[in-house]
Length: 294
Image 1 (tube, rainbow, N blue to C red):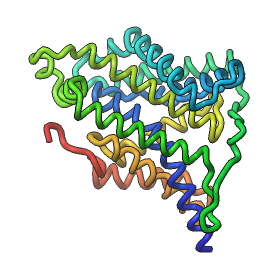
Image 2: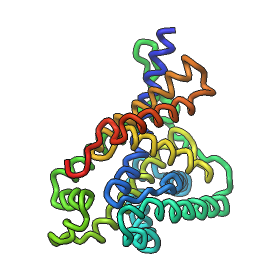
Image 3: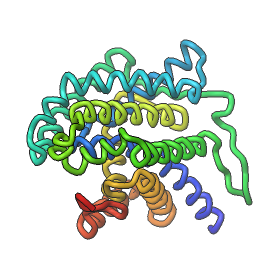
């Protein structure tokens, strides 16, 4: 029994790394633009398909194609912002969330329908020579692919933290996040900050999609499920710490994995939602969140 629990802990940590990676982009777009993009999972899905077809058509390893996926989806994010979300950000802050929900929900439906049309509804998975590789520590199996996903999540979080706190652009981005009107008065190009932040958010979702296509599978219908996971992680962590997002993702993965052992796999999703409601009720800012201006 103890070995089963230990294996569940390891599996939960590795799964939580993917959750954290998925949530990074959603936290960035919501924290800076105050836009709740419920099509975030569909952007993840597109990133997964990009990695899959790059592997199938050109033989590019998923880790080698990560820069390509990032650049392509960054450009797609710029296009989405210019065509859709820049009109949302022109409204007052308190109306952006409801407007962005409507716009992004429509976008999610369109992207899902187009994916079914061009990619069919079949699940796709990238199978490499190392896909089934794992190493064993004290009889506990650690899959290499899922461990790599956790490493990618940690690296992405630290890079984002460094950009936000150590670069001129990051300081402008944080100023815009706290009060866009005052940021504009100091000479910051708020529209440009919004555009880049949204594009990076889309690119991060695509990077997560690459990891999902390698360790799990992608299909046109996976978007909503991953969006919900990302939203739960953002609520658990709160806004203000990218490293906290990864920690919250790992916490969610642990809760789901251990609940499968203790109360049954059929209640796995329920425990995640219960945790979401508890934190939202008693700690609305999340475990790592900070109040505006703090």
